[in-house]
Length: 93
Picture 1 (tube, helix red, strand yellow):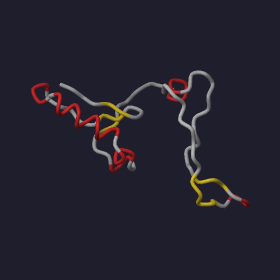
Picture 2 (tube, helix red, strand yellow):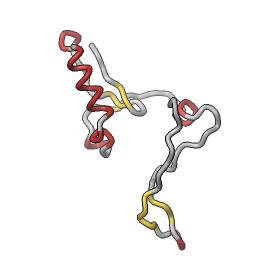
Picture 3 (cartoon, helix red, strand yellow):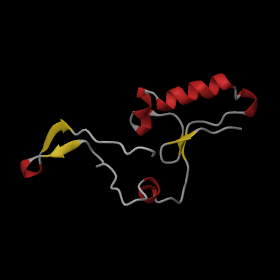
């Protein structure tokens, strides 16, 4: 069996070994890295895996800070400005 895992412990699906082909692996890779794979979690197929991981330490071991959980900045008085914030993605992670 093969189970493609992405994100922070999200399993795409369970694939029987007899169905694993280079073409299927290419299709799965393109799906997971394509523009549509960043949809809201409920819209993604698959299921969550229970993992005992501190993802912040695993993904940012050098003390780097993760990006904010939202791209909408807080304006004056705590109101959201509605303007997205562009973030640099550290290389090699």
